[in-house]
Every structure is written in structure tokens, then in C-alpha cells.
Length: 425
Ligand SMILES: Cc1ncc(COP(=O)(O)O)c(C=O)c1O
Ligand SMILES: N[C@@H](CCCC[NH3+])C(=O)O
Picture 1 (tube, rainbow, N blue to C red):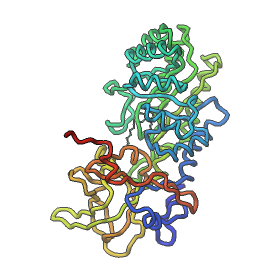
Picture 2: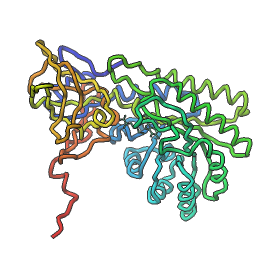
Picture 3: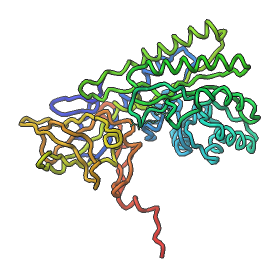
Picture 4: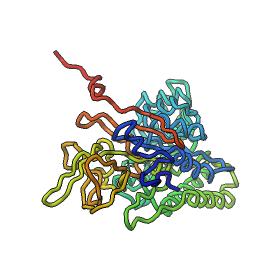
């Protein structure tokens, strides 16, 4: 169910008109629906109920503290990729015992911080990383729990920039090297081999590649068990993709169905081969928790008819939402208060000095300067990828809860953007 809908001719977030939010907080503003966030998280959590499972929200998708806090209160764990994300998760009250640390380039300082805070597991991606973590843990008198991120060489059939599980990608340990790498890890005194992990890519609409990767991990767990290396958890990586609403797009497989199929396979395997030994299952969804819970609200500055194209110049830009220019991603754009009248075909562009500064192309819109537009399904990889390019302050963020609106990040002021810099005299 969408928590953004037209009521009395105005697009609402839950029961608040977006026009009211724009009047109160200005534009561009990210608007999130609390009900949608919770519903999306519960699609995972409910499907895992009664199971030894953990949903670790991949906070890179949207790391606003208020979003994290809502998920902490629902029992979420977190998938982090930096020391900064760890501190952010802890600031939101996360239980470090539910935090897993992914990423190919963990620094010594990040490892120290994570060991000090007592995270659940490091998802290690290479042999040099294993050695670094072993050294750091040894110096601290600790044993680090590790899982190897195995690259199962499965085609996720998604955009090449967000496909991560192929041999050509920088991520993980090659499947053919996994056994030797586990043996090496098991010999290191300050590591405890705890699990296995993979993440083959993002925005997967079909779960077949995910299940193919799961089968490969299961085979490897059996091979390891035969060598006396017993794993306690299996982490299958990111979640299912979302429906961005482009014409002809396939709908994503429902989250509950996907998780059901994961447990079916795991149950069949444990009954047949793994002697019914317990194994915790970890999921790392990001996009599917937050994407459709968010919209980017913007105003039209100018309409600029061109010889070849008409441009609709808005006050949001590629620094607020990178997905279109970075991946040629199609994002839905809706007028907040639709007008009667002739629609024209527009490219939606921002004020940044780059031809790549576009948010949508070839959209039929009946609009006037000053009108509000909402970019839909913008809650994931929107604000978290925003920058200050062109010395633009990042957008405000609000969370709507029923008829209440909470400002959860105020708009940056231009003078804050150079406050960290120093002139040399
Ligand atoms: C290691 C890892 N886990 C989880 C995710 C989250 O993926 P998604 O947002 O597709 O659920 C990502 C991002 O692709 C990732 O790199
Ligand atoms: N940032 C990407 C997803 C990358 C996922 C991170 N591994 C997007 O907007 O679709």
C-alpha cells in the first residue's frame, strides 16, 4: 500500500498535504512516511518470525538518525560499511551485538572501533583484510568474529554499477578461493570463523539469482563442515528491489515470498545434510525498507522552452538525488497539485552547472513556475548519496506520522558548508 496518495486534489504523505510541508519547511525536502518504513521493515521481520534470523538494515540506503531510531525500536540490526556508520547506528541506540560490518577497505581505526564496541561480525572480503583484522584483534586482546564474503559469480541481472557478485566485481573472495581462505582464517588465532556472507547486487526484482547464490553458499557450508569448520550463520546480503513505476517494469517478487523460499531451502538442507544443526540467517535489506517510504519534494523555478526540448528547471538537483545521472535511473515525478490544461514534454533539470544535472527526462507535465513536484520512491540512496556540489546545502528531511510532521534534519545553511575550511596566509 502506498502511503503517498491524492486526497482532495493534493498529494499527501499519510494525511499531510505535501503543499503544507513545502510551505512550512521549504524545498527541496525529503519527506518520509513512518508507516511505510515500519510496514517495509515488517515485511522482512514478520517473514522471519519464529526463526533464528536477523534483519540487518543496510543503513547506506538512508542513514538519517530518526529512521535508524525507528528501526532500532522494531528490533533491527544494521549492516554498516564504515566507522562513521557504526557511530551513527550507536547514536540511534543500535545494539552493537546486532551490527555486521561489510566493505572491501576497512581501516585499522575502523576495526579497532568495531572491536571495541563489540559488533556481531566482520564480513571480510580478502586475505589481507583477514590478516589485518587478526593483528588488530590480537593487539586488543580480543577475538574478532568473521564471516567471509564469498563472491558466488552469479549474474544479478541488474545495472552494472550495482551488480556486485560477478567475477569482474571488486567484492568478496572468489568462490574458487573460498575454501583455502576459510582454512587460512581458521588458523589465525585472533579470529573466530562464525559465518558466510554474499551480496550479489541491488535492485533485483527476481529472487532466482539470490536463491542460486544461496545454493552455492549452502554447498560451501557442507564442504567446510566436512573439514571441521562449522559456521553459525549464513548472510544472504541485500534485499529485493522496488517498483520505481516505469512503464513495462516487472513488479518485484514480494519480500515474504522470497524469504519463505529462503527458509524452505534452508529447512530442506538442514533436514537432509546439516544434521538439523542450527544456523542463523541474516538479511541485509536497504532499498526495500526505505525507497517507497520517501519522496523528494521540489519547486519549479522556471519553464524554459527549447528548440529541441522543453526544460523544467527545479530547485532540487543531482546533488540531492544522484540516481538518475549516475545510473540513468528512472524515477517517477508527480505534480503535488495536478492542473488541468495542456501537458508538454519536459526534461526536469536542476540548477547545477553540469549537463548531467537532470532528474527526469521526457515527462508529460501540465505545470507552471512555482508548482510543486514530488519525485517518488526516493527514500533510498537519495539523501544518503547527496553532496554539497556547487556549494548547495543539502535538503531538509521530515518524517510524517499520521497528521504530524517532524523535522528530522534541518536544511544546511550555505555558510556551514565552508566552516571546516581554512585559508592559508
Ligand atoms: C554489502 C551490502 N549489503 C546490503 C546492501 C543493500 O542492498 P539493497 O539496498 O539492494 O537491499 C548493499 C547494497 O547494495 C551492500 O553493498
Ligand atoms: N546506490 C545504488 C545502490 C548501491 C547499493 C550499494 N551496494 C542505487 O542508488 O541504486
